[in-house]
Length: 425
Length: 69
Picture (cartoon, each protein chain N blue to C red):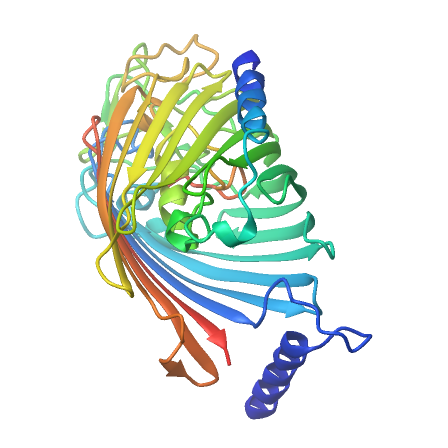
């Protein structure tokens, strides 16, 4: 059965990939042959400001994400892209949603061995693209589905791109909607029926907590893009996104410790006064620009900058530079650097700084003021003759990137990415 | 917003200077010089979306998914 399925799949993409125009006349396809891209990333981070434990505690996390992207030409003008992957992570801070279910002493600085320690996110993202005969108009539509234990996301979107001036100028507009739903996993001590006779502190433990009524989070975005070829070696683009989010924007398992509430503990773990409370809508405006400059036969420059503003009080700037250096016909290495800075959200407070009378508060350091620096190196191997073969596919390229990320809050992260692209013979 | 509109006008006005012909786009068509983000960069973009407040205008996701770990 599996063999029959393989033959049918292979036959289908062969037929789709090599079909001719209906009138028998050869038309150059928008994609000549089916392509398969295999991607893999490993991400690890550590820090001392876990949001699950109210801004103090281990942020240790590892994540592995294998992904496959299959691009299939359909007749001359269309491409169907199927993008699917899984993201498997283990998180010390998430494990402390219930810090009392392991066999260690409960502490925000140690991972619990409970069920929330790990999770898997799976996603599927098909996109259909149609190009006009003159290739000056491109239409696309997509669906995006992702699911993990406490979260489900359904998205859809579309876009239109117009090329003009001998394809030197490109104007694009696209829209995307995500309809997400939480299955909230509140901190264990805030759940109905929680009892533990080891609680210590002055008085009786009585948190402010109430469960969230609405569990949906909707995101709507519109993107405008313009790109322009300026010389034979220089091109630039500019993007404006307008993003609006509404619904449950708080994360239900992120604790907050308030200044004007007594402290209670079980072993070394402080019990929550509440979970974070954030407004039910957010408007974001990022503006980004890219440049690509071919300095000479050996060296190029790829630059990116972004200005960001939102109505939660965050303003941010991003700048990055990548320098591709061709060390041979087949190998390119590219050192890269990225700088990022943001102001704090109006609702961010460190541990025990917020008062219970405040309408909104969070101790999530991702919303604090910080700068970050990222350094990295990438290598690409390219074989235009696709001499390396795997089954019916020729190897077109292999890429590897590694980056080290340092945040002024103390968070440190490393990411390794590996990708291989194959073209069907 | 005014600055953005001015930038767009500035970029579009450059198009009147010269139109680079298809046969002259050998450098511009080099994959390494592509303006769009490379598919491999998606993982970096993802973790930036999770670990930083700013998102968007980089070809990455602007919503969908929890990103709460």
